[in-house]
Image (cartoon, rainbow, N blue to C red):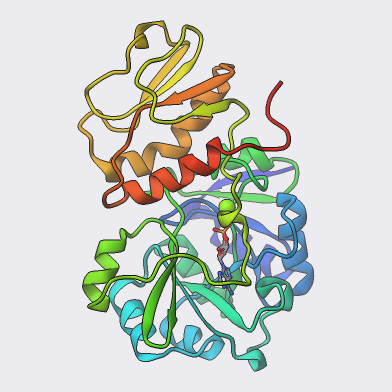
Length: 322
Ligand code: AMP
Ligand code: MG
């Protein structure tokens, strides 16, 4: 049995569950997170079970403030500068772990680094009250589309978790941007809710790109964020019966014959498109179409992260809808 409770009324119940080692789905500004006490191995194991997530994949630990962050990880000058500029917000920083803090090794998948983020709103308040960091990947079945509303979480994970805290639709709609500082230079590990250019403006230099050896994690797997339907990107025209995910004011040829049509942003606004991406994909998937065609989306600003998620949603996978 899964309860769906409005954020204003949910904090005591969420706290009690977390203190008991349970997991709770919570709203953040990026996407909904499936949260558990990051120092409690049983709680972290429950996160992996509820998602069906492979255990070699590390989780992001969420903190309430800089003091908590610095007790868990070691901040060099540039990491601190980026935290000052973007926290609370959709930036995750990978920093060396302080093992004595007691983050459970399931969170880091045994790595000697840790991914840290300070979320806005309900999540931040909850962590401050709990006094401990929360491990929280996106609140969805592993490999599937991330959830950006309480209802979407309940549809996907209902029956598998005790509580979904409903904070309404998320404001950013994409997962955090992940950055790691190496020898004083910031490397982009995953594009996300803060555009690379915004980070470069604060860092004062271009981000390094391309992942260094060693880390393979879910958001970096080729197939991820996948709907049941097949996907076709950069569609200039569509076939009858396909669903269409549009962007901007110019339509793909044949669009009037689409089985279902939604637009990420009529005005071509990439922030609006990011906010709508996952909910629109879920809605088009529910139309029952075998294929979702996606109109071209520019790569600048948040378009980089949107195209990253779409490419993974479109990648070959083991078990497409038949
Ligand atoms: P998710 O919580 O599903 O948004 O995914 C968390 C992501 O954080 C993973 O996909 C990794 O890309 C990244 N991550 C977590 N821990 C580390 C780490 N220690 N080093 C590098 N990347 C990490
Ligand atoms: Mg995820």
